[in-house]
Image 1 (tube, rainbow, N blue to C red):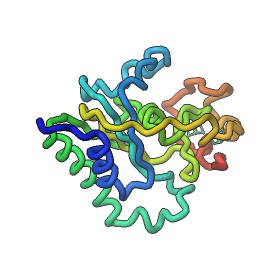
Image 2 (cartoon, helix red, strand yellow):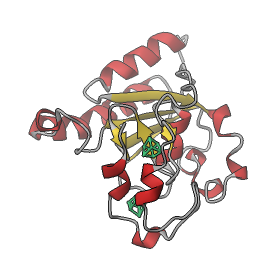
Image 3 (cartoon, rainbow, N blue to C red):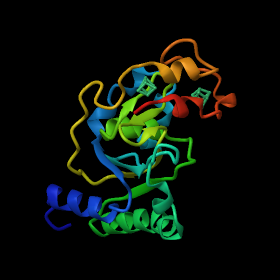
Image 4 (cartoon, rainbow, N blue to C red):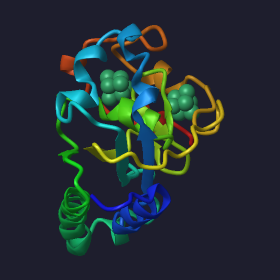
Length: 197
Ligand code: SF4
Ligand code: SF4
């Protein structure tokens, strides 16, 4: 394996994903406390890549909050949404690091937690992710990789979620912030519609 330049490889990976508006990188040590959170321990990145060192979260805002969504979600976007993550995996594989793509509908691994650990947003009171300017519940994918990439800084508290609790008030399955709720009936999108950020 040739010398690994962390900054250079991370920068190249991000440029390969530049068609996504939201991109962030998190390091493995940020997942160390996951066993303390109910429901996370079995949904960690090691499920797909046991020796992972980094996660890359990428995506776009939910269509309602993404003001330019008409431009973004055309055929070209759909095509590049599929192709560019595959190119990243090939590139990292060429460097000697195994990787795995977590697609947006995959519930085996928590994409919300990966997004939080990659620094792209904050956990909401209804246990989803909010990204300032892109709303609550962005459409996310991730790449879990053995490559030791340069992690992005975590945001300061309230950088994304202003803690207004409007999402919680709108949510029919929770009375308390961060309560698990009955996820079998979670699909109304009221939280995303209520979120002002
Ligand atoms: S989609 Fe509906 S049920 Fe699910 S968290 Fe949002 S408001 Fe609650
Ligand atoms: S509605 Fe308020 S509390 Fe909920 S995610 Fe948005 S900013 Fe945070």
